[in-house]
Amino acid sequence: MTTDPGWTTRFGAYAVVTGASDGIGRAIALDLAARGQNLVVVARRQAVLDALAAEIRATQGVDVRVLALDLAAPDALWTLAAATESLDVGLVVAAAGYGSAGRFLDADPASDADMLAVNCRAVLDVCHLFGGRMAARGQGGLVLFSSIVAFQGVPYSATYAATKAFVQTLAEGLAPDLARSGIAVLAVAPGPVRTGFADRARMAMGATDDARTVARETLKALGRRRFTRPGPLSRLLGWGIGMLPRPLRSTIMGHIMKGMTAGADGQHRQETA
Ligand SMILES: NC(=O)c1ccc[n+]([C@@H]2O[C@H](COP(=O)([O-])OP(=O)(O)OC[C@H]3O[C@@H](n4cnc5c(N)ncnc54)[C@H](OP(=O)(O)O)[C@@H]3O)[C@@H](O)[C@H]2O)c1
Image (cartoon, rainbow, N blue to C red; front, side, top):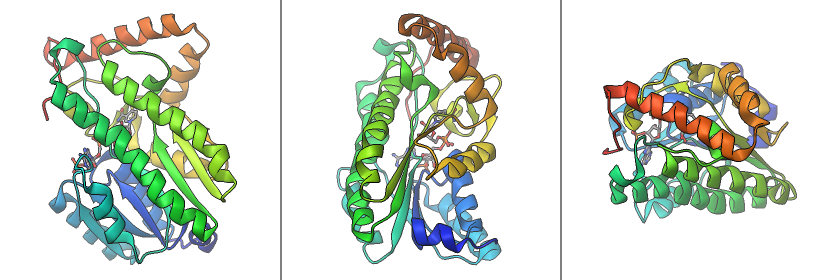
C-alpha cells in the first residue's frame, strides 16, 4: 500500500464504491485501497463482495465494509445512509449500472424501469445524500459513470443510452455548482470495456479497454478535470465521431450497437436479468 494522506484528507477516510463486485467498480475499489482509503463496497452479490473485502483487507490493511444491496430497491438510499452514517465518507464512485441491447419493443418494460432506477435514480440519490455530507465536511468527490453512448440517441440501446445521457448531463450541471462546496464532480465516459457488462447486456464486444486502465485514468482525473474519456479506445471512438452531426452519430452508433447485439447470438436480444 502507498498511503496518500493528501488523498484521504481531501476525499475522506472512507470511499463508497457502488458496483464494486465487478468490472470498473472493482478495479477502482482496489486502486483506492492501495491509496490507503477505507471502503464501503456496494452491489447485490454478497459473496463476491465478501471475497473482495477479504482480499483487500489481507493485502492493503484498510477497513472494508460490505453492503449487499439492490440499488433499485425503493429503500436502498436509506439502507446506504444508515450503513455509512458514522463514517467520514468523502468520495462516492457510483459505478453500479448495466445496459441492454436489442429492439426497444422487444424489451421488458419492467427491466427498463429497473435499469432507470439503478442507472439514474440511485445515482441521483447518492448525489443528494453524500453531496450534502461532503458539503458539510468542506470537500469531497463524486464520480459518475456516463458512457460513449450518452451523447446521442442510440438505436438498439435506446433506454441505456438515455440513462447515460441523464448521468452525463447531471454531472455537468453538478460540477460547477458543487465546486462551490469543495466537491469535485467527475463525469466518466468509457467506451467498450472488458467487464461483466457485455454478458449482462447480452452483447458481444470486439475491441475493448481494460478495467484497470479505466480505473487508473478515472482516479487520475478526479479533482483535476470535470470530464474524462478513460482508455485509448474510448478516446479514439469519442473523438472520432464526436465532431459529426448528432443524427449521423446516432446512425453510426446504432450500426455499431446492432452489430454488437447480433454478434452475441445471431439475433437481437433484450435484457432479462
Ligand atoms: N463496460 C463497458 O463497456 C461500459 C462502457 C461505458 C460505461 N460503462 C458504465 O460503467 C459502469 C460500470 O460498469 P462495468 O463495465 O464495470 O459493468 P459490470 O462489470 O457489469 O459491473 C456492474 C456493477 O454494477 C452492480 N450492479 C448492477 N445492478 C445493480 C443493482 N441493482 N444494485 C446494486 N449493484 C448493481 C454489479 O454488481 P451485482 O451484480 O453484484 O449487483 C456490478 O458490480 C456502469 O455504470 C456502466 O454503465 C460501462
